[in-house]
Length: 203
Length: 105
Image (cartoon, rainbow over all chains, first blue to last red; front, side, top):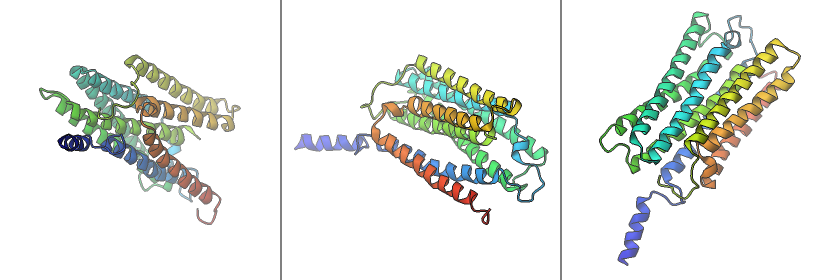
């Protein structure tokens, strides 16, 4: 009976009822719901991008700098590599390499955000603002919300970096947090893969 | 690390190879964009499907290998797919409906 009680306590400690940690399951469900969020913004942009509605202001497609955005996309793709290398380093118990790759991921994210701020500034200086026309609004909302997601990811990465600098580093328990942040970061990357193609490359 | 039931993850070497592949696919996308813009005769009828296919390939690679979904419990794949296909169905329907409704837009 005592063994049964002990087993029951152990079961609750694992935070699972499906064979998958509930927090991990929750993250995947959250990411799944994010498709609906970004789907709305992408649809909104697609509906308005080819229509002028009588506006004579500048449209996003006239201002895109494809070489610059391609480099930004490359930077974000490489941040996915550094993120996965951080997780791999943690799984092998190498705390130093984990810290290095976490910081590299955050830095690459910052470069991407910096590029987006530069792009937005250029567009505004050229005369395209949030209220210029429906296509411009759709563009700023879509890429702006994506940028906000990247910013949140950077905050989480830097928080993990701060925790990893403690003497014990990232413990087994915090390793799941690293995995969850990694999932979020890769998701932000795949959303950008879609945005880059649909918004920037498809005429 | 709570869920130890899945298969071993790829090695760092494979992660780097995947990153190189993703970079090459992105370069091909950009190349197609300029080919369509400058050469013209390739035509958007070929460029657009090619760009969409390349984006899908990149998407699947990141989800499968970097997010480790191909090594995870199938339940996670189902949850993920439900959201993705729900969004595609919902917004696909909305876009098609609105594009063919001249009175609305």
